[in-house]
Picture (tube, one colour):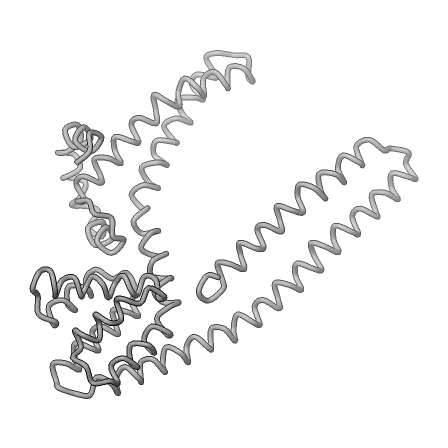
Length: 289
């Protein structure tokens, strides 16, 4: 435990224990986001960080607001208000951070799972024992988070001596992906009833692949809509506005403000909108690429 963690636990340990009773999902979120810290320690560090924001932000904001408003009392009250809001914002963001990490990991797993399950079913087709199949799969790093999840199961079996069923059950509790949870529960059920694991993995791989193709098909139509919207509203709109303001400036004889407005539109607003469109497309792309 670091000095910062020890200090936060000394100052806010009892409070964090009380708060943890109300944040019932935090323990599960920390486990699934692979943040190796207890809920009490995490809440303590979050509380300390939130309280430190206030004394750091207050002097700086007081100086800034006093410079702009030229009235110290109003600037000081405004700085206190904004500092409190910043402290609350830091606490809220920090408490929800494990959820953000968990969602990103789940998205990475879901994007790789169709191909990973196909590779896993191919290995299982050799009729090797399942723990050997998982061990071989864990040595291939091409499937990112899925490989890490598999490596954790292999580590539980080889290092801690757990049996295969218990290792799968533990991984179900730790994985952030609902699809991988479904796959692992299915594998566990197949093992317990003695069914053919190879057939099950092939069927699940085909199912994941079919869903992946459907998402790509839907995204292709959505991407077409985005491109049409970008070309018509952003590019053509900018060109039309530039021509229109140039004509108005020529008729009215006002040049300076119009040129400044055109400069802001072309070199500031248009790149920002383009970046926003790129971000929108990246986030909506299956696999996030």
